[in-house]
Image 1 (cartoon, helix red, strand yellow):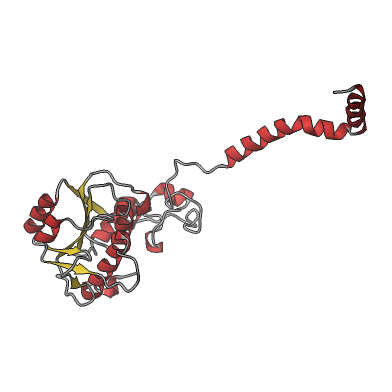
Image 2: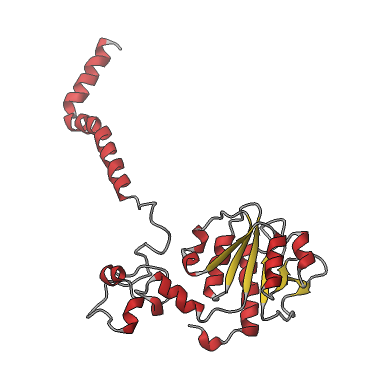
Length: 259
């Protein structure tokens, strides 16, 4: 830098002392801003829906707390703090065990099974839908672990059962007098839209991609397909399960028991 250039820089600094101060303060302000944003980040430990403040939930119980024989079904902490869980209004402030027990009185004879040999991420969606339809039990075949995030905490109110293999699932279904119906889109399937599903059904779904295994189809009374009219080769497994469950509901459920 020449002498003339150095003098020009010194003159600029003297002419704009505020700008120089702002420049030196920028790193400190940036650090403070990052710290503030970090403090404002939501806590990851809180689960989806059950604990957030979103559009679900009610505040603390207003008025005297419930008394008498029905009081045991209420959770004192929820009465005191409010209920932010993803439950229907009829179950507000209820203990988890009380909710599950009440659903047990109205559960259907329908069972759902899904193969989980590659840790299928759709299982959470299946469990959530099964809870909405008061399915008796959701059966996980293969890997015991699965991604529960998609269940939106409904797995706490839904009966779940694990089977190491399809053979063990089929053997269990035979002991319980359940008819196995596979859901897939392979050639020769019975259209789900015209099929009559047995009342004591176990609807079996394959994982995303491979579909229902050959062993499962061999053991099933029939394999049903869902009519498609577009370009995709298959429907998402979680969506297909919801369609099939609702088909059973339309044929067998007492709609007077719905919310």
